[in-house]
Length: 412
Ligand SMILES: NC(=O)c1ccc[n+]([C@@H]2O[C@H](COP(=O)([O-])OP(=O)(O)OC[C@H]3O[C@@H](n4cnc5c(N)ncnc54)[C@H](O)[C@@H]3O)[C@@H](O)[C@H]2O)c1
Image (cartoon, rainbow, N blue to C red; front, side):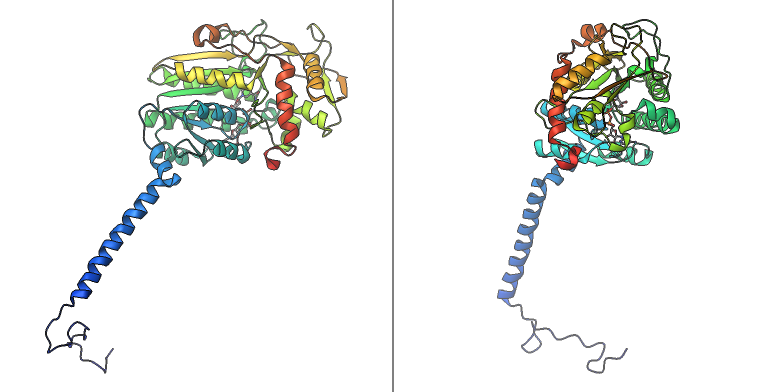
């Protein structure tokens, strides 16, 4: 293009040469330039200071580095019932916590409660991820410096597992492999694994010890047993410290009413006895159906071992504290005392002060008469015993949260 106004080789007139073609440096202008540079430097410094003080800046930094005297724990499934209670306890005990959850069963509301309680930078971060996505999981392990993992995340309904077994093998067994591979790749030193008494199946002899043969009878129990086997095989040639905790039936909630159990309403049919009891007390279901009154137990109904979630969480902290490199610990976590369904229903009626209608029906196929733990090993080796063993009291606490949160965390 031709510029008719000025030949190409002619320099552009500048305002700094007003006299006889001589370069004239305006001292005021120079002062301005220096001032501008200083101002820019000051603003940049201010930005860096502000950025450093902002929670997100610190969080990124802090979570990605190991820090002397601080144990950074990855809590998978930390938006769920047990995981959120565990995260609360860990945070209270000054651990640094990263929650990874895909919110398929858990509640963002629980994470928000925790974030409000521990807003300080470097205490808690939440990462929304599906553990089935190995690439995403690897990335999380690359970007964060974990000292330990408590692997709670799982689908966890026996009934659902019989209807959709592949979901259970994928979610429980395969995802545990993904987590373990990432841990191995990054040299994370400690794993606490959430297992279950369902891995024992129907043992002939009660109480159940850790030596009781594991013969699971449903896909949930089988998937958990397979995950245990993978962990145990891996640990033979690894210096990772491993603790496998086999929980019995978990009930209760935070005594200060900050967290509770809020399962998806669509899972109600597969739900646990405490959930059914609260639903009946609220009139969401017409009453409770007790299946089987002719078992060879004291009152003819099934007997189970109910462990309060606060005790369970305490067992995790003890396991975390006592995990040792290259060592594996396997523990039952229960009260050691069986309670019948009739006893449970009576405690529930008292706890809710509701006149719950109870129908007694024939046995449900696949239910076993009695399941309760022998918790001697965990008492002797980890110095843990269940403290909250008053069924009615645990249910009262849980009921308080349920009453105040009629729509779960949605109404909080
Ligand atoms: N509740 C019990 O009575 C009981 C008894 C024995 C063992 N357990 C075990 O305890 C653990 C926690 O159970 P819970 O009762 O808190 O269940 P929950 O459903 O309340 O919590 C599980 C959490 O894991 C998350 N999750 C599931 N799949 C995921 C995935 N692929 N990626 C990321 N997050 C995922 C869910 O969103 C949820 O927040 C489970 O491993 C369960 O098998 C529970």
